[in-house]
Amino acid sequence: MRSFIKYLSITTLFSLSLFIGPVVRAQSMDFAQLIVADDVAPEERLAKKIELTTDALKKADERVVEMRTKLEAIKFEDETPELELRNKLIERANEYSAFYNDKLTALAAVQTLEEVDLLIDEIIAYREGAYTIGAKEILEFTLVYSYTPSVLTLADERLENILKDVERLEGLKLIEPSTFVSKTDESKATLQKAHDLQTQAATLIMENYATSLLVVPVVPEVQPLEAVVTTTEALPALLEVTPRSLAEQSLTEVKKLYELFIETGEKVGETLGIN
Amino acid sequence: MKEEHIIKQLSTLKSIEPDAGFARSARTTILYRSEPMPARFFGLTQSLSTTLSIGLVVMLFVFIALGGVATMLRTPLSPTFQGVDEQSLASEAGSINQTIDARLSEVAYISGERENKLVMATTPSDGDSNADKEIDLLLTQAKGY
Image 1 (tube, rainbow over the protein chains, first blue to last red):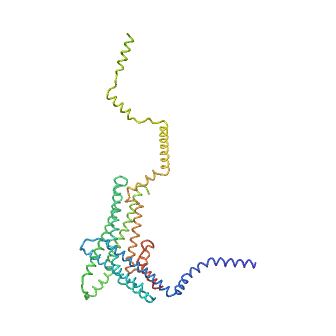
Image 2: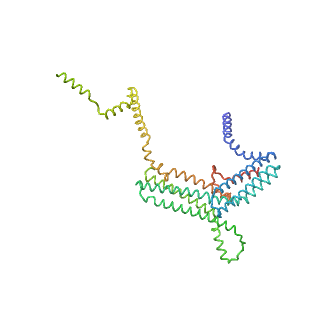
Image 3: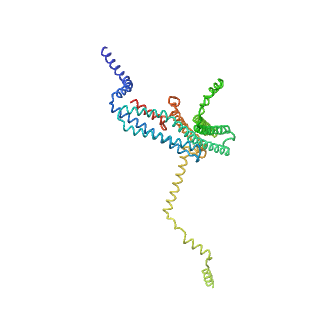
């Protein structure tokens, strides 16, 4: 009996070790890494910091080059404000690229942990400040003038093909005329809305640009309390309308449009008895 | 007398000649006609023809057995009605949705919505990744190492 209990205990302990072992190991992984990170030699830390920062700077430069390429691919007529703005944004992208390349050169001369940390702080501060403001504008411009129009062109072509197919199926007496009128009308309206929103986004970008060019001193006006309240209430609604928000709405309409397209395709299949 | 008459008749018959046009056409036919097919080759051709016929019949049965006709009848939309083809539509919609989400996520990230979980959730994990997010992560890692 005693030996049975002994064997049972050994078996239980062995089973427990099988279950608990991996858990304990997994839990201790992060802790182990932390210990290793704390234990690494300063030279090793410096090398790793330089490696990570170099990687970040190279990627940041690639990112800026990608932005510039997209901007350059957008074509406008000569001497238009759109072209003027595009060129300004390209110049800005060049400035970012120059900054990242300067820092890469500076990084090569770094000798101590303090120096590398200072450099990293400088890069982070730049990215959070100047870069973020400009990159936001570049991405917004590309979204409104390049990406959204390309998506709208694709949707235009798809709608055109759907309308042609429906017409042909009606001609072949395979589907009843007017079966798809509501769907196709809804699709046309949705696509038109998406186009309108994109146009509004483009108009707003150019209005904002024109405003930024005007050097008008801001004179605070003394307003009656009621007027201030009204303005404050209207402010959140006004702030929400940005080129980006309009482009987003346009793209959301495109998403809805494709849902309609899929529904139309399914309905055609059902009508023809092939689903 | 009778004998002489017969000889005369024969002489008359000997002088009979074909019409000039017929003679020309007959000569042309003889000169340009194809060589008579050897019996062995003829047999081979016949055999091939029979094999081909049997083969075609077998192929037809296989086609029917595999539902070829049914498939043809069931898919009249392809390729003539690509506009309403469900597969093509679903594929295009999926691709568009993915790129739209990626683009909006990029702009949202740079616009300072780094902590917006909803936006982060829509960020695709593969393919067109968010480059700015990756750069910021590398810098944070470098700083904290």
